[in-house]
Each structure stands twice: as structure tokens, then as C-alpha cells.
Length: 231
Image (tube, rainbow, N blue to C red; front, side, top):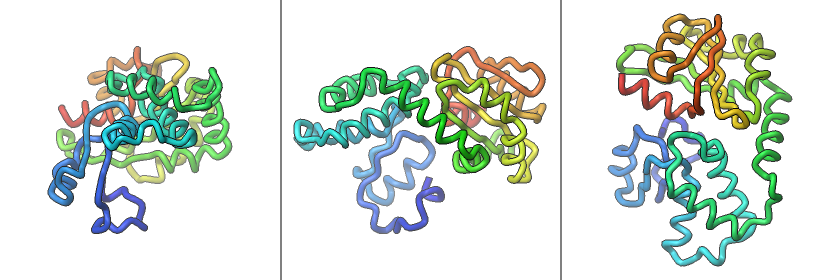
């Protein structure tokens, strides 16, 4: 989304774009043509690795770069459990693993370290990963917070006060927090909007007990937005 690019980036100086989110393909294709590589797969890091291969530099990738790209694929695909995961993501991770020096239990280490970092300042973490999105079918905006954690259940229930306080700063009653729980393969939700709860039940088979909900599988926010835009 050109509106969410870091303010220090001059759009006129962008010469290539690699992304895995839908919605702004035409903007970038009009601007830079074939140099806009936007494909609906699990991870943008997969596209970068494929470009390493296409340019003949795969064998020369540094260990640090391989570590970053491998971890990016794990993160973007929720450890390959998100429905957006493509075989290309799995293949890229397998190929990259030959160039990494990560420990065997790196995935759990990575997510647990993310948990510790995010929980150190919950309101800041929630704010930095909240998106306000206009949904055409609803003719209104939704405020959607997202926290990807190794174990999300405790986070959503124990920190509902901080979540609510942060999301209510957007002055919109139609907010919700979605928290993929990597270790369990499901999402946890928190929302006080009855309209939002009904939407999540409809598009994701979510079940709610009061203001807290769950899903039978993992969902990324971009997948939720895609379904909302199909209403």
C-alpha cells in the first residue's frame, strides 16, 4: 500500500517492488511495469529468493541473508500453516535451509522471542500492528489489530484491557484483535462489536464465548481482509 510505505521513501525512486499482498498491483505496474512483482503466495521472501536464483546468485547468498529470508518465509506463512502457503514457499524454505546456520528448534525460538518482545510493551506492539481498512461491502472502516504469537490464548484473555484501550484510540467501535497461535494452529479473537463477531462467524467459522472467539485453523489478517472484500 503506497500510503503505508515508510515516509522516508521517495516513491519516484522505487525501481522494483516485491510483495505478496493484493490491492495495489495496478498502481505499481503503472509506475514501474514488469519490475512490480506482486504475487499472491505466502511470503514476499519467497519472491526475493526466487530472484536470487533467476539472477544466478543463489550459491553466493550470505548466511545472514539466508537466515533472514528463511525466517521471513516461516513468519509470513505462520510456519506453513496459513492457507496462503504455496508450494513455492515450501520449496524456497527447503532450498534456503541449505545456506542457513540456524538451530534445529529455530522456529519455536523465533516465535518465543517475538512473544517476549511484544509482551514487554503490549500497547505499543498492538498499535504498531493495527490496520484501519475500508471495506466496500460494509461501507465502513474496520480497525484490525494482529499479534502473531507462539501461544496466543493467554495473551488475548490476560491482556484484554490493554488491547481494548489501544484499539479504542482509533475512535471506531468496530475493532477486533486477531491473534494467530502458531503452536495450536488456530486464531484467538477479541472484539466487543456484535457486527464484527457476526462477520467473523460468517467468513471464518469463528465461534465466540462472549467477546472472545476462536477459529478451527490459522488465519492471517491479509486472508481475513481478502474474505471481507469478497462480501
